[in-house]
Image 1 (spheres, rainbow, N blue to C red):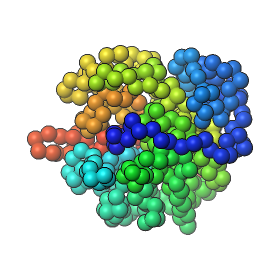
Image 2: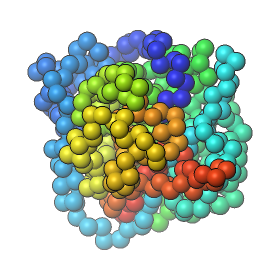
Image 3: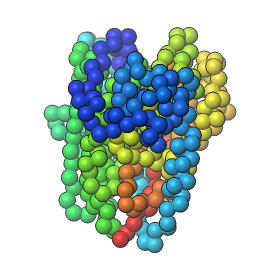
Length: 418
């Protein structure tokens, strides 16, 4: 999420990738790509191509890009796959744990109630999920604490190298009982960066981790990718560059690929401008929605929420009121709206008390946390994708708060045992 607020007005992102136009997929017309066709339908340029999504002056939209038809097509195609005669279950959780404590330029920046939440975060490994993709485990000591908690519960872990971990703040864990044979790991830092996050900012360089192994009880090789994309809607070109980079990398992985993380953008925003809680206008929401299709295009991936039939209710998103400030009264939003929201996959919203404490109306409620699948041999079936960890379960003085300012998103799959 967007913690270093003062950097928000300072600009300085990346230049265009030097190889833009040279990569397979760059020159494809939007209308020819299932995951991007909804962008073509609202583009003011009928000949727009994928690389235009990295060029701000060339991607102009006349209205909100609406992926409804694509979401439905993904679900229908997945439902039409034959049943697996013999299969084993697999669960994958992505969760931004909001463990930030950094000092830079003499200022301490930290996530709310960090000590109380950290003391309980090891409990996520008690939930029993097979693979966990965690973000915002920024500091080495927090990674060591969570790795110890995971190993004590029978997980193998990977947080990257000591040189790069505190840049990307990522951690992965897999239950040893689902792993067969050798575990291969990898790590990378994106070329596409918002440079001020690294210097003079708090030593952040966005990146990714991967873990690969054969799933126990099957003949299937899996590679899992964990990432945390750049935040703030105005840095959508940086985020699009990251989708292009990791998409290309993940295409080289053999077998089934699962990519997850806090991608810091949703598939759909009703309006291009958002009137935040202070009355300021926040722009570029339609451009912010383009990354979702680019992750799928460049990585040959599919949104697991769509495959399960539990993706966004866009009609309900359209009902978000223009005067969002009216929903910011205690207890962190309109109770009825939040009761409905917690049954969706909107993993970032002011219904979360920690999120509200930090951002309070500055961002659209959105599905920020995603799980995507590449399964060219149709070896997996997505049963469901659910949002979890919404409860205010951490005691801080006389109040209860959530374990993180994000909710978790978990996918339940069945995998061919042959």
